[in-house]
Length: 478
Image 1 (cartoon, rainbow, N blue to C red):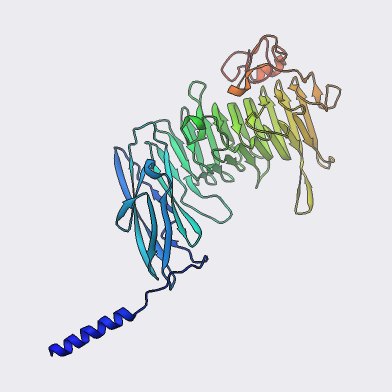
Image 2: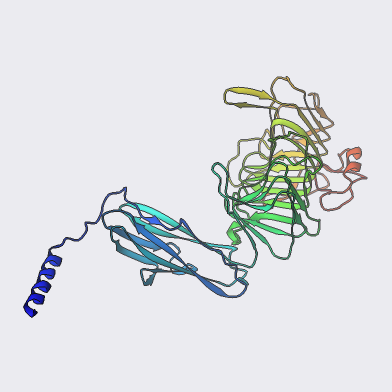
């Protein structure tokens, strides 16, 4: 019996020694598969704390895979800690995953939510290099105490979003804690989102606020406590960096429930406000009062067949247009300042652009268009700051500039649509590089040259100064 057992043991050893190990694949089409493309640490900490998540790494092939490198991109300075297959570190090399097998990666983050130097959203990436393929896994954690709006719906053709005001629901955002938007905050049809005075809203890269057709956005700031909407990067370098988030996107409001933006500062995005009709053009409106839209990579206000009334609005420093209208619509602007110098790069477009048509899929469409602008300034670094593309008037098209200061080489007061305007005279802003478009001197041509009739309709400037006696052009009374 002992001899028999010994024989079996020797036989097994021989077979084991003769068995070949699986070959390691070098096929560049063989990539790793992960349990997630983003590891989201979605715990909001109220005290110093940490959280650990796992990421499973799969090899779905019949051959072994050699991971040439695994790297925590933030290195030793990362707020995240990495443990791969039981070993801690920031860089690992030549890790083999057997055929049809997997390995575990454990990730930990430690956050002090009261540390004001901590970003609202803490990010890093985990790199995997296999057969010449680089694959990245995003790591995302919440930092400071805030109310986090995190996209949880994904529909093909639309950006990721989270419904923050459902149908027949009115939601108030208050100023106790800042709001941080990751993705899009969506107002559904027949829902209303009201953002109260003093509320700070920080939007992550690629995100924004989106009102679906028949939804309503109300931004209800005050002169003392404006609502501020900007990017979520708090480092000094990003203080005046445009393009940090996407836009406020407003589809048609429902009749009797216009979109309203009062005493807001909207800055550092790609487009400040995009107002676009889809269902019932110009039957509802966007009403903007005492609001600054500044430092956007693309446009300050982009309107598509919409109705907009704006008083005491300032738009400055945009990479393309300050205010662009396409497909017509109905617009009334009083005491507005469009000052576009775009000193971060090259701009070839006018500050103000008006169009009443669109060419789409080989078809030409024209729409009714009405524009009125009073006691306002349209100025900037270009010789031509007023651009138009107005088609033959198949539909009613009118525009009027009354008591405005405009930089243009194409028009003067003899041209139809202009009354008592000033042309190509420097308004003498305080400092456009500091986003200060106050009038700097009593000698400014904009001082005292406004229409008193219009001034009585908008009697106080953006800062609450009375302008009725000797009204200046623009949003700021000298």
